[in-house]
Amino acid sequence: MEIIQELHKWAANIMIIIFLYSSMMWFWFSADRQKIGNSSFRFFISLEMGISGILLLLGISLIITNPNWLGVKGVYIKIFLGLFTIGSIHLCATKTKKFLDSSMNRKDIKIINIIRALTIILLMTVYTTGTMIRVVHDGDNIKEFNEKIGLYNEN
Picture 1 (cartoon, rainbow, N blue to C red):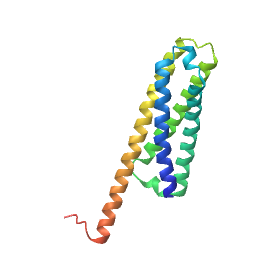
Picture 2: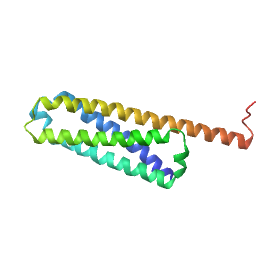
Picture 3: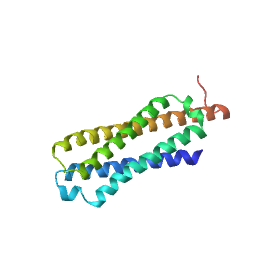
Picture 4: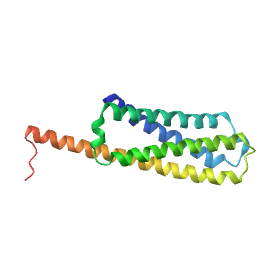
């Protein structure tokens, strides 16, 4: 169970890095057909979809192997935000691929910019929410441990 949680955490870190890199490339080069249409950018778009799928599978595996997480405060909000974010990543990647395979009309750039910016906000929000849930959960575990060994007194 612990390994799935670690893999999920690292996949989330990797997802943020990949999405930020591809978004920077998009924001800088979206108006330049030659630069934005290169194979490295297309590779990043494919990675976005792949890693977000792995992240979803790891999240589901984490809940299946440790259903106690469903009792942790704030986890349902994180699950909803996570699903919404993964959907947003896939929407963004799909629209970007469609743009690259089309005539690359400059009018289509604006909507992709908006989706990418909102997805970055969602990624950071879901990551921060998960981190805060872990901190609170780990803090509760520390408190419970200290109570059991007699180091914590609520007076």
